[in-house]
Amino acid sequence: MDRVSNAPQRTTEGAPVVLTASPQEQPDSLDRIARDLVAFKEARGPVSYGELARRVGEVRIARGVAATAAYPARTTVYDVFRPGRTRMDPALVHDIVRALGADDAEADTWVERYHRVRTVTEPAARPRPVAPVEATAAPRTTVLTPSAPARRRCAPLTILGCLVLNLLGLVVVQQLHLPIYLDMAGTAVVAIVFGPWQGVAVGVMTNLLGFVVGVPGAAPFALVNVVGALVWGYGIRRFGMGSDIVRYFQLNLLVAVACTMAGAPLNVLLFSGFSGHGSDTVTVSLEHLGLPLIAAAFSTNILTSVIDKLLAGFIALIVFVWLRRTFHVSAAHMPLVDHLHAPLARRRALDVFPVRVALR
Image (cartoon, rainbow, N blue to C red):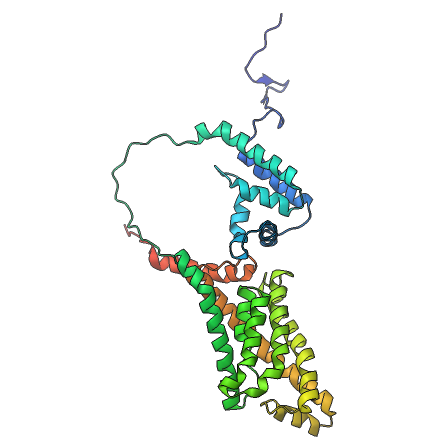
């Protein structure tokens, strides 16, 4: 009987041939699960991690999870696909598989596979106790984050502040006779951060309370605020127009057009094109150039609306970044906020943990 040698076999040229086990013979691991998840994701078409985080949030909301806690961060979703992990969140794995179009039974199969791997690898994954080594420890800095009650108070206070911001804009425009509106920055903040219908509520209250700040003519234009809130809110949450700065810019232009389509007919029908707003001077100038009244009213409205909605949209973006940094408000539905927040976080980390360079 021939003996089987464990030594590497050699070819005629003398180079050793190393025999390795086939992938099917290798034991399952978290890295293999991560690789298989990547393949599973790619088989479903090009899906960004930001979009996948949004889908996971929708899966959780459909299951009854509150919208404020449903959306995971994009980096959290990305970490599930990253090799080198020692553990995963099985609930998140389940939701990711569901968000990629699989049913509950298939998602449960992935979770069971994860638990089998953990059962086999957990004893080996535990670090061995290491004798303490005396060394000069780096100074530890405690970073204080807002408590859960503080985050819960953030929403009503922000919504109230946005209502005040809208009313303040009405007063400024009325006193200075500006040709823009400034009554929708707060609507944009609430619609983008908390949802379209919360923005609708702020917009309607703004116009109905216009008489309180001496602008009774604002009430008929509540429809404009409603349209703006819906386009901002659904544009971000349903159509992903908060993924980058270009798409966000396009969203604000879309809001301007939608508000003109709602506001210009109201201005012509109710006030014959002259509502007493500062933009009436622009309408008069266009009429003197030979434009008919309706064309002049629409042209004035679209011009002033573009400027106004771009200003309101980018004020809302700045406020959202501040809320994300200060109160850790979820921005999973708007990756642009995390992109802008990350450089601020890095600069803050450098201020808290300065790098010491020893010159030798």
